[in-house]
Amino acid sequence: MANKVTYQEAGVDTRAAAALVNEIKSDVARTQKQRQLHNSFGLFAAAFDLSEYRQPVIVTGCDGVGTKIELLLEHGMESEAGKDLIAMSVNDIITTGGDPLLFLDYIGIEKLHPERIKRLISGMCDYLEDCGCILAGGETAEMPGLVPPDVVELSGFCIGAVEKDEMIQPDTAKLGDVLVGYKSDGFHANGWSLCRRILSEHGSEFSDEEIKSMLAPTRLYHDVTNGLKSAGVRAKAFAHITGGGLPENLERLFRGMGADLTIPYWENEPVQKLLLHTDPEDRFNAFNMGIGWVAVVDPDSVEAACAAGPGGIVLGELRDGDGITATVES
Image (cartoon, rainbow, N blue to C red):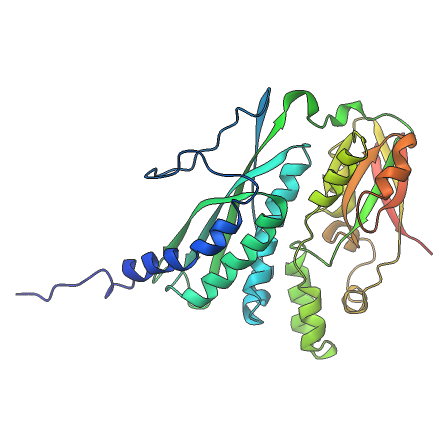
């Protein structure tokens, strides 16, 4: 009789996975301090009660960490990867003026690595707790033979809601409205294919500490949107500056209008060392160049907008004619 093979011998340990779920329960519970799931016991899907909203509009987002994940894993920075995962989707959600409510993660891995996964989840929950979003579920898939060892596939999905009459409307922007930018904490989770290429060719110029500093997680900008609401400022538009940089992420907001932006010099020594190896024009389309979020407000609201979050600064104003240009302050 042929030998019988167990699922564990095939590379998948369901018992270890179940044990891991129990170990991360305290982290998951941290994300339900501000909001709670509805009737969660025994369900195979997460539910949230929207009855507190008058006219809720559901908003959704999906993103990952991109090739930055390679360096984060190499340097044991799984917690930072978890924060990146949250911020990339949550920031997109809050561009609508809405609330991030639920988050689901997907982790694909060759073999269950409990400590690595717990660090990822802990980082996620740090950011989710901060912005009041529930870690409502997820999937950790062991895929021996498909996912290479020491590789983690990582993606996330966020669900939010916004009152219909409070939703951000970029088509209300007009000539003379002001673009206020807010600083980034680094390259965030975009442009890392270019970063990795430069580091592979010029790695001797960078210390491990400099590389780790450049791997700082994507900043959450809910403090800015909350600050604007507290000040009674209704923004015309928000832009999360991701792939494509300032030009691409702002041009999608306006029809027949553009802006000539002056951005401050990026005070970040390791970043500036890396930028020396990039094309002077292309870098504006690859990186956020120190500005990770932009709010478009009317001129009377500029002072309050600049005070709504750390690093708030006027970048320029809307003018007639398509196109966004950006130059660094001399």
